[in-house]
Amino acid sequence: MSATYRGTCLCGSVTFELCGEFQSFYLCHCHRCQKDTGSAHAANLFASGQLTWLSGERDVKTYQHANSRHVKSFCQHCGSAVPTAAVVNDWVMVPAGSLDSAVDIAPTAKIFMASAADWSRCLADVASYAGFSDTATS
Ligand SMILES: [Zn+2]
Ligand SMILES: [Zn+2]
Image 1 (spheres, rainbow, N blue to C red):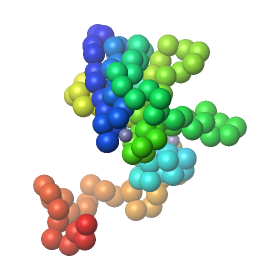
Image 2 (cartoon, protein in one colour):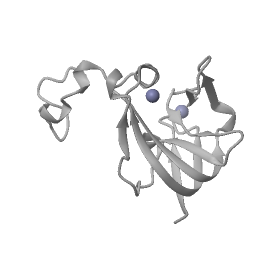
Image 3 (cartoon, protein in one colour):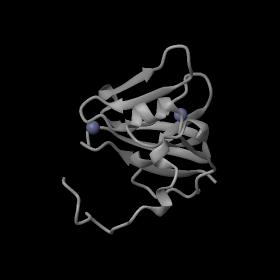
Image 4 (cartoon, helix red, strand yellow):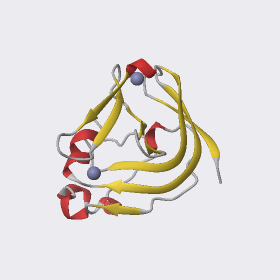
């Protein structure tokens, strides 16, 4: 069912609205996604629908990795991942963390697990806290 979702970057310059439907939700552990997120994996939703920039469209930069389909859009001020609309097809890739609206589908799959960082393979076993742990340094 089509719905309206809203999102923002961390600094608030870029705001957007997506009218559409999420088709899939992948946690990609490939090397490229590790590099461009600085983390264990990307968390990207794929939607059919219409992306509208509500503010900051000129602050959105898109990096297309050479000789691949790997692409990442981000706010030029804060570096936050923001959606990328495909040029040819009617779909939009939405980084899950960029959304302020609730996501109504669960992750479809973890992909490229053969490339996953060794430290990210057993995260369910790591101690969890509601906020900072006693040993946090930041
Ligand atoms: Zn920003
Ligand atoms: Zn990836």
